[in-house]
Length: 159
Image (cartoon, rainbow, N blue to C red; front, top):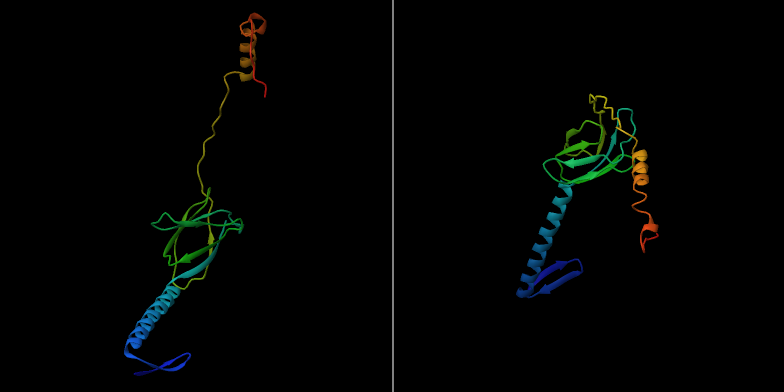
C-alpha cells in the first residue's frame, strides 16, 4: 500500500494502481510540457501593407520563404501570421516585392512597398478596315443564297 496525495484528497493505492497513476502522471506531464513548448515557439504577428503615400494595399500577397504557403492581406491591407516564420516575401501588382526577416518576439509589422518603375513604350494598334461594314456587306452579298423563299421549307431557333 502506498499513500497518494491527489487534488481530490489523500488515497491509499495498491501497487498496480500506483503503476497506472505513474503512467497517467507521466503522460500528463509530457502532454502539458509539449503544449507549453508549442505555445512558446509559435508567434502571432499582425501586420499591414501600405504604399508610399500610406494608403493600404488591398489583397497584397505575403508568402512564406521557400514554401508554397502564405496569406493574403484583407481590404485594409491587414494580415495575420501564425506559427514560427523566419522570412516572408511581400508582393503586390505594380509594386516591388520585399523579402523580410522576422525577428523572434516581433508582434507587429508595418510594410511599405515601392511602386514598380517600368519603362513602357507606346504601342499603337490600327484596324485595317471597318469590321461592321465588312460583316454587313458580306450578309447583303449572300442575301439571295440565304433567302427563305428559295427553299421548300426552313427552320430557325428563336430564343
